[in-house]
Length: 239
Ligand code: FES
Ligand code: FES
Image (tube, rainbow, N blue to C red; front, side, top):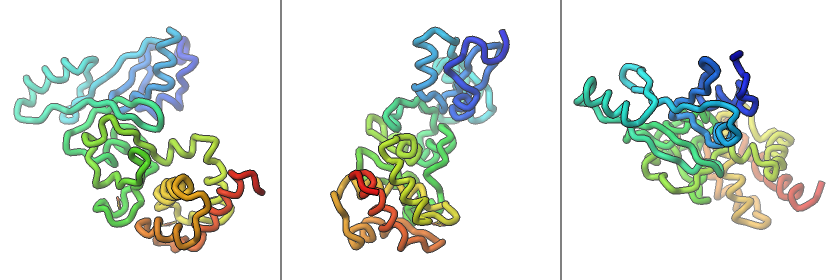
């Protein structure tokens, strides 16, 4: 079978985003990269064979079942902790991730799922660049343990950007140059979404207060209220 045959719904881009690979025509998804969307669709439609791989973080060996990697640890790394496998409720879907129990949510998003929107800047809860929403409330992914997140709805900037409803917010940031180097921008956008949902028509003071924990080294602060006001106006049917 040629590469791509029988996997019409699972594009190369989907694979790369999910950390997967095509081998011998079968879809092989590394745990840490199983986004339920396209993979589940492919399975449901019987268009491809999907096999989960669990990767040993010590020697890189891959296994097709959690039991197999557990056995591998018992035999080869008896003094090391066996990786955890858990399901995250992420951006409206479910993602199976293989993590180490001490990993922060930021590490799980970045290293297990390849979601690089939430940025690590200070890595100590001081800058807001890693802001995500957990159960609708802003949270710092760098100071949140992944295992604390089981069963909770997590929303990242990738989920917001993919939702057509929030296009006016992206447009508002772009139109008002709300982003310069862009490093802080994902966190700013997540906070902006939170503000728009919390206040019907926020004042500049309310916006600035809510965003006070989101540090921007490029000094884009005056542009955030403008971006948010423009987004609200567009979402309410204005220009
Ligand atoms: S990287 Fe998380 S608050 Fe700075
Ligand atoms: S746009 Fe550069 S840090 Fe904010």
